[in-house]
Length: 632
Image (cartoon, rainbow, N blue to C red; front, top):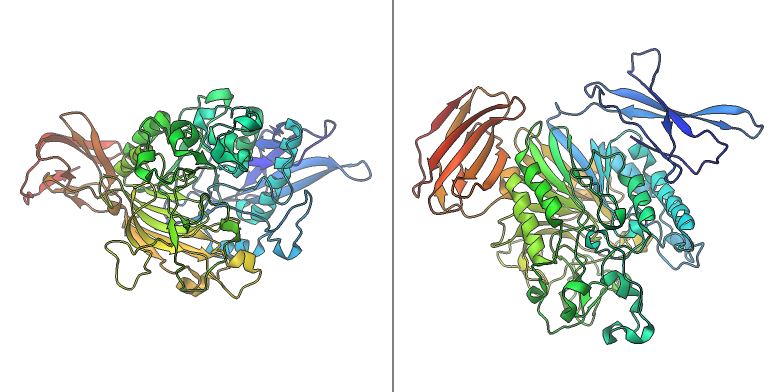
């Protein structure tokens, strides 16, 4: 648990106390006190012997002098729910991009008071009514320019400026965070950058003299430094920001810092028998300005319009990096205490975005009007936004091929455009489903209005659905999109931009996963009426890996296990683990992707460490029908 305090003076008490009890306990059990960090003003509680099967009440106490100089004890309380391992369905809420206002800034205030959206009461009340078991905040919890201009005058002032904006996020979400566990990961705006290509943590280069900028940066020189890759803020400030948002997460998979001593936090979390990979898809990512200079990139957008999207791939460019790919490889094979898997990241592994053909970057998006409901604007073209994880294509495909080995769905934000897609690498639909949740407060209303209807379009669905190549040539099947549209709700600058949030329901016995895209001020009792068109959508975990099966192994019937069995298939020719999955059944017939060969099949339950292994299993062209009964 992380406990966020305001700045405390050097003569104030420097620690907080944590106490807990069950509902029936008459007295509080007090643990050791926790010192308040002098940089983040956070205190941390870690208890490794916590009984997660029983709901507990908790209480944070802090002593402070009142206006008469007397020491008084103040309390903050809530509850810690039991791990919902017995719940049939785990409900997760997912949120992104919480801007507090629209309009101009003079450094201290909004020029348009009717466009102040803070404190987002309608959104919070709607989410509370959903009663999610766990919360995911996938980035842009703060915007460096809202509601005041960023203060970069000194490291100390930047830290205080950030804390002010971070406190507004906590003020907004406090009623949610008080009683519900949360995963929070920072994105680019959280570290005061419009776009971030972390380049393994390096510092951005110094700005050149005005005369030495490339011609295509004329009038847009402010983007040059970030386009070269790295962090603009001092690493100590970056670490402070990351600590406030991620220090309550499980320990990192590999805690080795990247360049400049910037810390990492990528890790996994198991909650309610769902295993979540928490990824950092900004920190290791290469910068397009450095990797494809011939594209003439400005703010992530190529100005060389004669260069096709697929030619912008650079196989040497990094997306997740080797460290995170190794983590994913381990995570996909580990199904202990888990029935389903999902990956949480900042942004989407495809570029689902269009803008008017006259645009060379997305700078004009904020001023584009929202069309009337049902109207599809014409004259749009596919965007090539390298801030999305549609670039670099090789890195994107490597990430998808690693994640699909664990049949994982993907959950992200950042794009300000709610969407449900199915990813493809070598073929359409050969990788998993991805849900990108809409912005809570949308400053940048992206939209998906491709010039043509997708292939394999389903009758009755919007014309912007079906199979597409994105601007970089990546294969994607578009299932549902929450595009901006005019509404009669006020303020229009907020509600006309398709604002909202996501709910993901993991039904553990069946392996079904339901995605719901809710309007910001939804009444959950109205059901689909207050969801965006195209939702809800239910898939099965087995849908997340759909490579063509070339040959087959025998069907297996499993007896004697309490939990559904985990199957792992290994190619004996090269030792590659093809996939590992807890199948939602006691019967499963593995398929493989090569013509023939011999394979090792491991079957069992990692919860009990009870496994059987079958070696030299031959793959057959004709699908075997004689079952193998495996008795435990």
